[in-house]
Length: 311
Image (cartoon, rainbow, N blue to C red; front, side, top):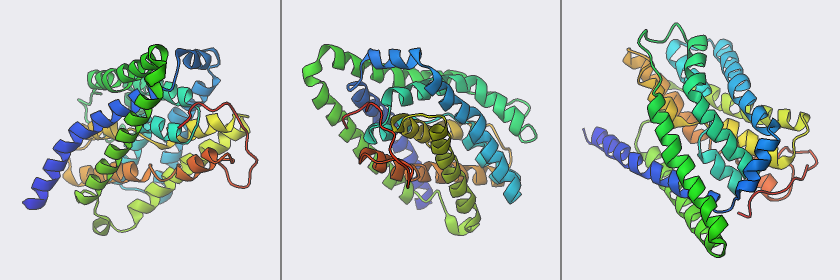
């Protein structure tokens, strides 16, 4: 009873802390950017196109390969599928900022992929998991669009306005908002770890193994593809982080429509929560290497590009 009460209490706290963290992060990052940088992304859309191609093609294909290789049962397979069809999360923008990657590109891919997920996620789910879906399945389109507007676009443009019209205060506001956001990230991560929702002992080491393999695979494959296509390290870091960091909140929203059976739902929940905790650490080496002026891929020469952040 006490454990259940603790979990409910923390879930209520998360519903407040996560939106505040997103608002602060987007405000802080927006205060380092100008509209000119987004115009450059629009004029040269190959970076956004590559990011979307990785999100919509490479990630689901890699997930399906792992499901087949490990012969995953419906519950575990559903968890992987839910992770693959969700768009990148706004936390990827914060990691890109900290790694001095191409921030405008990262935010652009996040915004486009999240809005487009109202169409792409149902399509991919029906393609990859038609045997799992309920007949009355529907995507929470209104809620996704509302969250994109409130927690991504409004604070982002508020930050850009600060950078444009209050330039003398922009750096101070940006750093304060970013540090406050990072403090909330640590609080949220600590709370999730102590809430007891991920019990490795109950399922063995199989689920962590294939979930980690999925995360590591898409991250390094994205870095390699970007390098092969001649992208700068700024762009490669931004896109690899964008692909690695998924929007766990959207995944959880989809899960509640997914399975009538409690066992399968527990397995899908485990996969989404474990991946959400793991995804923070997978891109960290590439982020640090790039921040230190080295190639995000070991044993490779750096491909410098114009930095998008002074973080």
